[in-house]
Length: 140
Length: 476
Image (spheres, chains in turn cyan, purple):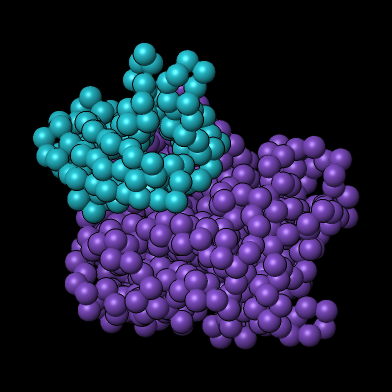
């Protein structure tokens, strides 16, 4: 079983996000944590308040862009940060719950806001070990 | 970058001959060193843009060009609607109408340095910056619509700044043809509380000393005196612009498919100018330009208030406000005939030369001020549109230094505290909300702005007027 984890990868002007997991659901949840980590340390964010999200797209890669953009929107419009995610990917649609809290500059020390997820270096794939990877570059 | 595909036209102009699907050549303005340091992707992206339908003359890259989404940053390309031309959100970028404005203060360097801590605190306190900050104005539906069509003109009507400011803003403060109805509810929602905020990342507010003048006559016309202090603001259309770009990146991918446009890269998503999708994007993008112009006008007002709290009543006239992520409908002479073109500038500014009818009367003889943002540690520059500017890259020039190192790498190399201390040692006072954010913006993560400016001038895109050195820098 692939361990669920996330990482950032190098990109000249912006930040690359990667989520890994045993299922697409886990990979999508992990890349969401990587998104939070662009803004602040996810360990500092209390998973207090749930927000429901739904996305649908023409294919699973576009779905990943939509998922991250939906989170970017919720972060900006609600002034929240999220630290726990439950995602159910079905084909090229998903339903998810994100838990988080209102942003508090003193405690979260947000470094930078994310403008949008892009189609660059975009991938949702099954690895030879059977695990799933979701990756994308976001514009900051 | 591998230079073997490029033909040297001069030391500062390089040509990529059309091949494969390219409809026009690529033209890169840079010296050999800048070019060698550019990513190979820049040539590839210049070539991709050259293959888009209706492109006119050439696909250009400015000396600060680097890899971007679809179009390179520093890319300039014009399209003719009569010849099947397209409009692309990848040619404008995610931060629609990001730009720079500079206010004159009339204060001498020493006066400002004496009050530096107090001024820095006043600016930091007055100007909302950083993630999650909210601005001084809340917009309901009606005010949102008025702002999206009225731009900086709306802001002045609300009591932020004066009519005189509008003369010194591109398009006199508001671009025509904005269609607020094509701006999504999400984009509006993101802007409700963000009017008059600086944002984060590479956006900044800087108090700068005029360190050197290179053209006394033009400097006099601009009101620039050596040893005096100016304030520059680098910011864009905030959440609204980001969401418009997000919305239309998706819609244009579908549109391109429907109109049978084959794209080598999804970020090149575009639609014919004369299509419902193209018109909707243009309408929404113009509304986002107006949002950026209004936002910078509000920020200018807050900066004036901060200065007044320290130095008393000051007019602080606006030198100019330029955007460097836009698509504008402009008239240019192509092969002896005047044509209406849709000019995309992504990380490139307009640079109207002397005598241009769109310039305000008191700047017409001097040419348009071109504001080039540098890095915190080095310098910013004020240039003027070149005499031959109108015929070079549709009167465009460079916009800034351009990153040369990733954020991840910058945070590995530097710590925020160390960056702040190092800058303090060089006489630059920093006020920022995030030390990690500061490390990501360390001066060493950017290209040498002087080299970019020298190449821009040598290529005949603009003339050198003044060099500015930072005294105070406020970051989100």
